[in-house]
Length: 193
Image 1 (cartoon, rainbow, N blue to C red):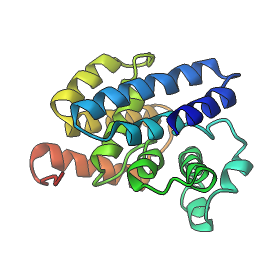
Image 2 (spheres, one colour):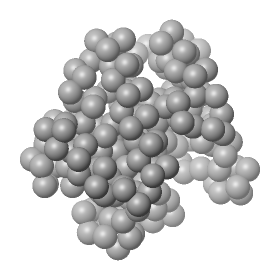
Image 3 (cartoon, rainbow, N blue to C red):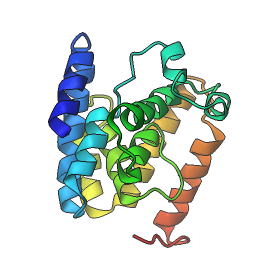
């Protein structure tokens, strides 16, 4: 399945070489983190290779895959549509219903509270893949090997800081997730794996 999905992604992103390079970097990084944390590498690989599948689709095409509630919930943050629609395409066109695969795709943009290890690996890999240039991806990767929750928090802060710099208000969901991982990393909340 992974080879078929990789071919589909490579075909779809052939006119977006930098995005394809990013996706392949996320894939490689996610596999390394999955191995480190003893996760199913096949599940992780599918999430990673497919996470940006609908990134360059028109918004009208992306929302065709979404429920009315999802469209309304993220109307101010349409960047979320590609994550939700990619997961839905994987489910509907390829019959994948495993939440260890779908949820990491849905939450890769800014994370969420109480992420599974699969979600954390996907979220961090999106930042820690070696082709990133506006921060040090190697530092994030090294941190993820030692303390995955701390790495999640750093990635969330990078996104929030970027949005604030661009005069874009982070979403309530995003801020709640950041607060949650601040509490996790300070020891106020214990994670169950």
